[in-house]
Image 1: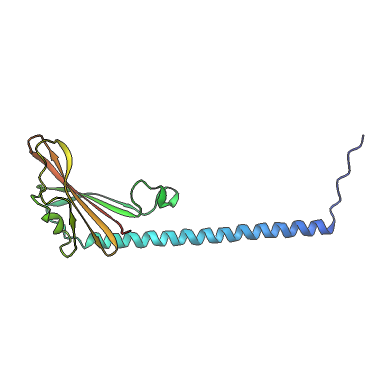
Image 2: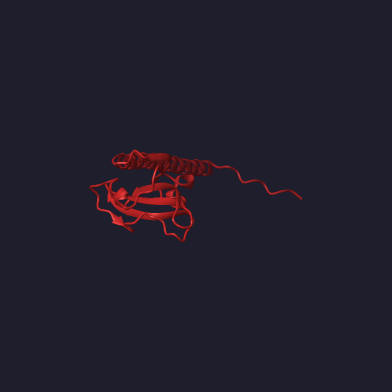
Length: 175
């Protein structure tokens, strides 16, 4: 039994193969160029967002007794996509330790005195019936298109004793 003969490659089939190869190669090239342009644009946007958030943070009047302990800047999430980020993206978070717990939310307002703040509590003292690190007062405002959120924390003992204080500042684009 003989095997069927393979069809002969005609000039017409050869041209068709070359045209299809050229179309596929061109499409791959276009996709690579578009992907590169998107990556460049995303990187530039992340750089712009970071510098804008740093500018907002630099405009804050942080008291001398607040010590910066940590700063986290998130400009892109997993695989460069903000939608998969755990933290707001882009965002900047700064953590401070405070020498003393402020008595009132005036300490928050003083960070950006010209801003219009929304304060959750004027009293920054912890309740006497809690212990551990608790948020005792917080405020939010919008500065130059960014939400600024400040939370004052206290390491509290039952009875209202405070063994430490901190502040968390979060800066993210305003929705």
